[in-house]
Length: 210
Ligand code: ADP
Ligand code: MG
Image (tube, rainbow, N blue to C red; front, side):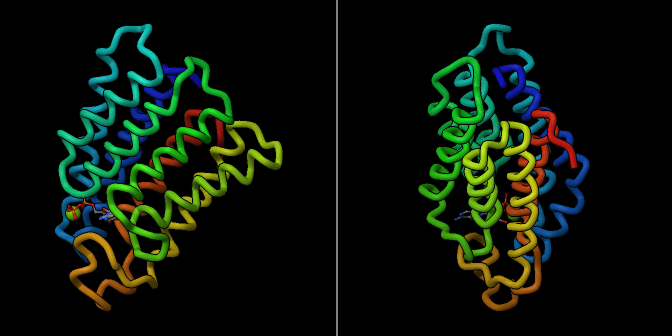
């Protein structure tokens, strides 16, 4: 993986979130304020557009820090700040031009740490952390089994989707949905759903299928 692949990842994430914006916004309407899908689609599309303007020799670090900065300013809301932090922290962790499976793992762990540090959510709080943490754990487990980058990304995407689905019976303890208390139970968390799409996009651009 290199800077161009990271740019392709953001572009693919923008496509998937845009295609699913209505569903994500409906999920947020049920337990939040109904802005998640459209805000994130706008933010990711703006990030992808900004990356298209970067010089051809931009580094992975520049790609992710640019994407993170644009995402924060164009998405808004809790998720814009959290995903923006994740991208910038991942960018800071990437000190090489050619990203192998180990470097990608380090970047993903750093992204998760950024989300946890800013949002203070634990697994089980019904947030994007439930999908993100499962994805990172599955990525690391796959890599330790000797799986290549594409296979590990595919494992991460499946785990993110499972982690998102697992938020349905949870009661929200962080973010806007927590204001609903027990009435947040029985709904899929919108941020966990978008995290699953972002990991699906990673699997797509690294050659993973299924
Ligand atoms: P807002 O609530 O500001 O409208 P969004 O609708 O963009 O934000 O995003 C809502 C999502 O953000 C939630 O579904 C949840 O996954 C995530 N989220 C909210 N607060 C936190 C937090 N403190 N830590 C982690 N994720 C959070
Ligand atoms: Mg919202």
